[in-house]
Length: 523
Ligand SMILES: NC(=O)C1=CN([C@@H]2O[C@H](COP(=O)(O)OP(=O)(O)OC[C@H]3O[C@@H](n4cnc5c(N)ncnc54)[C@H](O)[C@@H]3O)[C@@H](O)[C@H]2O)C=CC1
Ligand SMILES: O=C(O)C(=O)COP(=O)(O)O
Image (tube, rainbow, N blue to C red; front, side):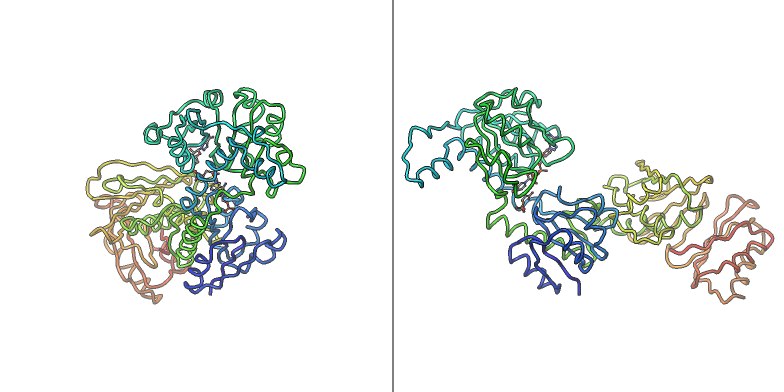
């Protein structure tokens, strides 16, 4: 029975779903990295939040792990590259906590503008200092949003309802989306200079690390109040503390930190005009229920051999229409590598006809999976196939053409290994994968089981010789498909056989006069 480790707290509903699916679910929060390394080998799945560091050392020890489920959005605590290399799916729950995080950002913005945390603490100390806590209104002010994604978008809507103007920097969103949200898209510097409030909602990436730092604070208005509830490291913490201390900006509110919990001497914890919360953005009952349910579903799907819809490192192979094509693409990859040499440096996949109009990325991955499986001992799957081909220095190209002469759809795979090899396949009746081309010869071969591919001179008696030689060795021929260039030229036989064809039998075949080569392939 698969075992699931839950290493950060998640809603009980998620645990129940996993248990109902028949898994052994163990909740072990607060594990140290060493402890995690020690135990991770015993699990098929792990569910984490931001509290668990899934670094390459942990992933390396995760011998049987199939999925890392993130009950939330941010995956910067997961080494996705290491997971991908190991064929481990990384999936998150991208939507369940959007509203919670947006509401928290707005709560921070308003708390900061009205000095609520400071006033609350003062009154509870027995003071009554009304005039010390005069605030500012949000209405009529410009909010600069960095990152107009799910959360940034919800923040923009709420800011609009507060009567704020929203100006946003996000090089990856469309004008349409900004228009829908009533936000004005602007250049980075423009947003920095025009904002009276700032709210940061980008993930942490190489590009966004310390996106807001000394230079930006210097360029900001000194009344600016900044909210940071996306990911620790996007806003420079010591630069913020300094900017607040030196009145370069009026205040800041942080929910996330580069190190969590932050060290005692983190300067943000010691500034009166900085308010802080312990990464509470996603901590509402509804959000936790949502993300726990979503991630339980992803884990169950993967452990049952299916597809995680929110996978971040695997192509979406859930499309039912694509299923028979996936099988075909994988077979073509497996075939082409076995008829050529394994030192291929380029795989070219061409999609023609109706299939060219579909999202073919998973098919190209399937070709690579099929290509790698016969030549590698390591397990290959849809997650790690692209990195494994890349690691082998094999370039993969994809092309599409609108029409095919003879088929509704045709997938052609070509490889270069010194020689050039080419195979192509189609679906007959839209469901039956069939190989229709091998190295330039037109054939009609079902792509299953054991096959023998014989190149021979096109002359009388060849088929009989091959048939009787295989018969002598007790190898039954289940089907046979011929193709030839021209009468008397070279021909090809694709024989579906019931057993593996050993090397000595193949050698005997190539000793027959008129037989050029005999390759055994396992499909
Ligand atoms: N404080 C908390 O508890 C929570 C924090 N988060 C964090 O909030 C962040 C945003 O989450 P979502 O909105 O769900 O993600 P999202 O992917 O929907 O939005 C991120 C946006 O940032 C934009 N972006 C990426 N690189 C950028 C760059 N260099 N400059 C400007 N914009 C850039 C993207 O185009 C995208 O529109 C994530 O880091 C997530 O981990 C999410 C949930 C709760
Ligand atoms: O979903 C996210 O990205 C969050 O930051 C929420 O983090 P958490 O699940 O509360 O550790």
